[in-house]
Image (cartoon, one colour):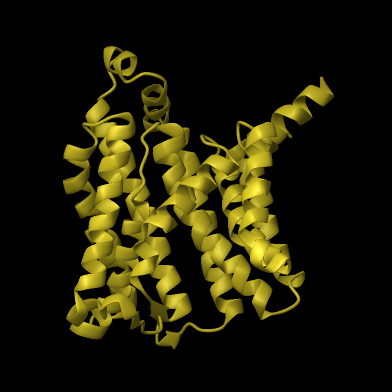
Length: 314
């Protein structure tokens, strides 16, 4: 029973149970579509939470990696006749290598300097995708080939639900294992104090770069899945507002909480869909709800609720 209370066992089992049961509760394709979008955003947030929540390194440009992964899955099959599945893998590898090159100079910065640098990185990627008309289709975007596995073209919300659900479960398992490893302990030490971590023998530069690359690869894979699912992409997927949404999901769900990040992604992805009843006041209602949550649940949704439940039991 004690093992079931641990995130690596109990939390994963709860997530797996929700993924398994949810299809029987969704009434139509619209709700499947919303849940698939939740899963894609949650996959990005799981990786981004490693960077922000555990290592304490802010990034306002992760939508750029998301967009690069999406465009890799679109451009490589369309322009270079590379199979879609191979394009997805090559996109993740390419984004990882790019993160290594970019991360070395950027991660020397701290605080708001790092935030501005990652913001500039994201804007640069967005401009590149928008201006390369011949390669990416420019601001109008481009169509994406169907993802094919063993000769079978993946289509339909039910098929994509299980693909995205499996990817999210796998990504969460990998993140939890990383957190419980010596690397994860080093990341938590970085979050508290880089100087203290370095004094205690932590290779600060290497660990910061490692988690930056891992979070970028998570974003790239999620971008590829999003592109293949929707069948069409535009540079907006790499836009600044998308980066802000991803960071907000991490903060709202709870920094340093993997499952909190998933909850934050679920709330910020699904809630706007159900606030459309307010018509032109939809964004105002969403902003008000977020303000109330952050005022009364300062540590994020899941950590704050867990603390209050613990206090009641005590």
